Length: 463
Image (cartoon, rainbow, N blue to C red; front, side):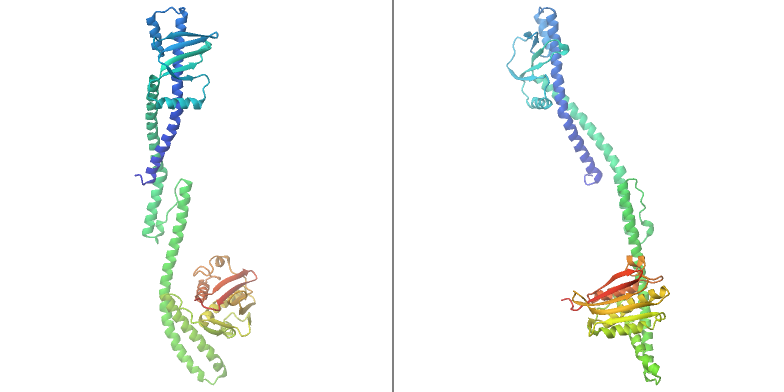
């Protein structure tokens, strides 16, 4: 029980209520002691007035009865600047302490009360006060301290017992209130979290915010959002796994078909037609890239993109091959390609993988320009990266820019598609291939006047 929130709250409530009662107990006992002494002064004044009414002529037995009823040893009354011993016991022990109740300070009353409780001896004390109803200037009594302490102890025990009852009752109310308003809703949330953990793909198990407390409802809303995103991510990963298996099967069969096609295309090299002789090498090269792509896809389906086979690659030749390949596209007639390569620039990269990266970026730029129904320019530049140890390749187009959704989920598969119907795989694959080289693919800008991507490749491998 003490390891639960409600149990600990119960203990804390008992402690705090008892602490509050103790803080109330001390001034209450001090106030009780003051009232007790004032009542003895009042009784002594009544007894003295009864004696003075008979000109001090009373029977000794009656005098003893008056002292007994007043619970004092003697009474001294000062009237008209004259102190008069009105009542007195036969024997009075020496006075140990004197208390003046005429305008006493509060802290002084509390101090005297605590000392009175601490001292268990029966001592003789003198109490000085002002007579009620202006029946004199001063009244003074002498009394034993034991009855006063006994009355204070009895009063204190009653206060403590009452405090204990109030504390227990208050703690019980708070305990059940906390369980009803806080612990029970929290247990309900915990139960729903456990149920969701058993089957996170089941959207029916996503928590529905229903708490009345704002704080707890905020927690439920945040949990609902997290569970919704997690369920969607799990479904997407499941779809990706299924799609990966399907793509692997397709790539396997397509690789066999392309291999056969490559063998048939080899025979075209013996043709006497100049046009065939001119296009056959490019056809064979395209078929070879397609076969390599299928093999890479199969490797990706098994684990991830294969590590790049780094070699020295002529940047101008690589960019020329990419532009020539993309110039054969159906919508490339309205596109002007502007290629600028630093003289003698040699990259250290995997030519096939960087070819795929550039093809993806240029194809996206070409499709963006074609989508706006006009002519456009795609500029490709390659040079040593300024202030960096490596090279950079920039691809800039004059298209309409990337849509907002693509900017929010750039480089994320199936989320960052730049055109309607696009899967967003191209940029995700391109970014992964560049990261495999130790480089980075970044979006430099995207406005209504065009988009620019930057590829950075390091000149030296790590380690």
